[in-house]
Length: 141
Image 1: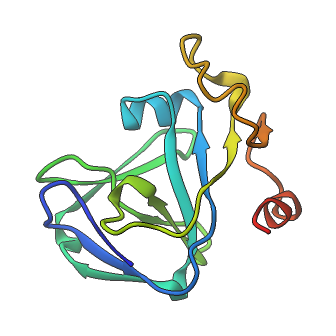
Image 2: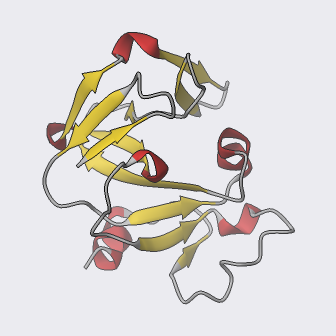
Image 3: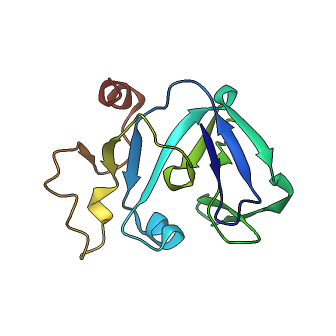
């Protein structure tokens, strides 16, 4: 599975089965995405490979530790590695091929935008924070 930023300078490849996608509705993800939520998946580091453009990536971090990596040419958010180095956060919108996965959770729904109501009755599990590893494994089945 290949993915890239808007201008194509930054590209990457994912291997293995794709995990489910989650949509984060927190205020920080809304600001980074410019939308009601940020759709992403978490990939084990061993299943992630940069193909090009790593030198085009810039980072921004808040004092709380929220990190956003982006292409310095087009501004697209790009994958970033977790603090532990065990996984990558991958924006689902960067995937350039049809995927065999789906949105399986809405997270930080307690801080969703007042105008964001489309997800409320979609039948997908909702969490006030990120699900625990146990909950995420159950959702992933």
